Structures are given as C-alpha cells and as structure tokens.
Length: 524
Image (cartoon, rainbow, N blue to C red; front, side, top):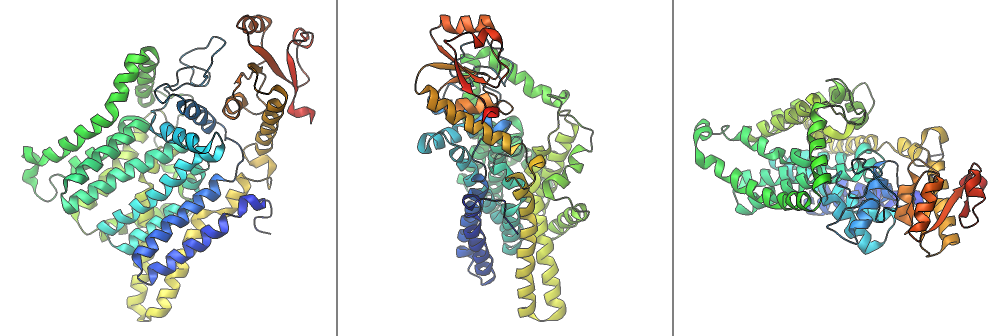
C-alpha cells in the first residue's frame, strides 16, 4: 500500500501539495498564467514543507553542523562558532571539532539563524529557508524559460525542477551539502535571471540585482558564485563583434561587479582581521579543493557525467533525454545571446568541476535549471508537433496535461523518498533508527540534567551525535569517553559532568559518584 510506512504527520502535507500543483497545471493550460504561477509557487512551497517535515532530527553529516553554527549565529551573527563553550582543547583546522567555524561562507547560515531566532531551535526552522529558496528558484526558472523560449517551456521546466527528487532531498537536509547547495543554487540562478531581465530591458535595477545575487552566491560557496560574469563576457560580442573591443560594452559588467564586491568583500575583510588564523586556513583550503582531493572526495574526469544518474534519475534513457532536451532548448531559444549564455554556463560548470581534483555529486546542480528547461522543451515540442500532425487540439491538450503530470510524478520519485525517510527498508534508510535513538537520548538527558551547567560526554548514539545534541540542548557535548585528566580539567573549571552509560564505561568513571550517568540508548 503506498505510503504505508509514513506516519500521518509525515504524509499529510503531501496531499495539499499535489492538489495545488494539479490546480496550477490546469490553470496554466486554461491560459490563466498569473494564477498558475502563484499556485505553482505555493504548491512547490508545500511540497518543500512535506520533505522538510519527514525527519524529526538533524541529518548526518552536514545539516547537523550547519544547524549548530546557525543556532550560535542567532546569538551573535558576527561570531560563527561550533562549540559555543569549548571547555577542552581543540584543533582549529578540524571543522568537525573546532571553535571559530569558517568552513562555509555565512549567508545561508545567517538565513538559518534568522529562522531559528523566529521559530526556535528545531529541525523545521533549520529547513525553512531552503523550503522558500527552492520554491523561488522554480519561479526564476519559469521566467528564464519565458524570456528565452516561451511560457510553456518555462512553466514545465519550473514544475519539473520543483518536483525533482534530488533537489527536494536537499531541502530535507539529506544530501551533502544540503542547505548550502539549495541557497547557492538559488542565488546563482537568481543572478542568471536578473541577467536575462537586463538583456531584455537594459534597466539599471537589473544590474543591481545581478550584483546582489552574485555577491550573495559568493557569500555561500565562494568565487564560483561570480559565474554570471563569465557568461556575460562570452556573450558580449554575439550581437556585434565590435563590442569585444569597445570599453563601453564592459561598463555594465564592471558596475554590477562593484556591487558584488560590496556584498561579499566586507565579510572577508572582517574575518581576516578578527579571526586571522582560521580565515587564512580556510582560504587556502578553498584553493586546495581545485588542486588536491580534499577529505577523500575524489574521482576521475567523468565523475560528474556519471553523477547525472544520481541527480536526474537512474533510467537508461536519462542521458538521451538530457542531451535531446538541451539540443531542442538551444534550437528553440529565440536569441543568439541567450543561446550562448546557456552553452557557456553549462560548459563552464562541467569544465571547471571536472578539472577540479575534489569532486562531489552536487557540484554541478547549478546546471539543473537548464536541464529541466530542456525537459520542458522536449514535452512542449513533442505535443506541439503532435498537435500540428493530428489537428485534434482538445485530445492533444488532454494528452499534454497527462504527460506533464506523469513526467512530474516521475521526477518526484515517491518510492525512494519513502525508503529514505521511513522504516520501510531499515538497512537502507541512512540509519534512521539510530537517529531516532539519538533524539530519545537528548530528551532523557534534558529531563535528568535540567538547566544546570553540565558537560556531557559519550553523547554519540549516532555518528557525531554530540553536534546535534548541542543544537537541541544548551549543554556542551563531546562524543568520546573522557580520560581521567580531562575529567579533572573540566572539574577545575567548575562544570558538572554527565556521561551516557552505554555499558562500557571505564572503572574510574563508574567509581566517580560526582559524574552523572545517563542511561544509554542501548539500555531502553
């Protein structure tokens, strides 16, 4: 029975999401475009909420760390820290155990911090910015498609993107690097959208928006966020070759780039002044990602081409659909400038990340808006051809709507979502039972320790569970069993000590009556 492993709380938001999106499709094909786009945005928003509501815990790995740093930023936005109170010594270069945390640029963390400030320290508050940005990205895709080809291509591409399994799992925090990637994709896509608007209107406000969005992208994932300027450069001479040698042709780029600098440069100056050691290390690490494999995230030059099966679907037809969609997209694109923009953007992203030594699957999702616009072009072209061939507009229209809904459903991949976020396949759901046990331990610890000044040891029921423990509580927590010298050091700083009793505590801790033993998850 479908969704039988989902709880009522989990599955309930799915139904209004589906209804709203079906209404959006019907409204669009009834030529009620504004109402269709509004309902599309709302439907994708609710679909994002459905995904964000599936897990009542923070997901291993990155979401736990991002959430904890964001919680601390909610207290002090200019001081990104992992351990708010690092009682024991730490190594500044280890982003999984350090104090000042500059491992990621701060904009997406500030967004999460604001949400936590408004809605409290809970996993849904962590995911709310991604719910919103994911839906807004769909709207931007619609407008890019409308400007470059037509409304139908834009609508279909936006719908398919909004329902895409891989993107929605990022909203849920499931895939590395979760909310960082959602935010980065939004700001890069938004800069791309603003560029399309500028090409149409030449309005100065569009230059400002390009600068703000691309600067925001840098404040999420560093200099790749400026990719719109590379695309812009490649299109300068398309309409008039003399523009390549004309200084005036470069003035809009420079004006917009100055705004980008004004957005992201102050934070770089601030952290290098305030936290020089940590900032210098992370800056070098950013460069190192291109030349060396970092944290075992390596692969050959074909890595990102194989990754299309993870991002867009595992069927044998996926490569053909992608290539066919892109070819049709380029053929149907109305202006040469837009065509070159699509080509150069795709080649830059895949070229850069294929050459980089460090590789992760999600690096190339920047291209996903173009891929989904390609899918939209495929669907639209097929039924436009069928309409011209048969001259039976009503039948073709019904088939078109059914095909759009069917393709959107395939993009969603509900069976895989249920597998990942329920106990349907306990050995293949990213350790859900372990994460739920960790939550049980948090609650037991809070009930036992109250609001007193404790340091909690052996807090890892799951992997790095101490990080999520510090998000859900106000205690400082370590994953390991402390040595006797560490216990003495903590006591000398006038902290109380608690430890999860997993049945394997050493004698010096068992004999210490001042150490509170919290029943471990394996005791329940």
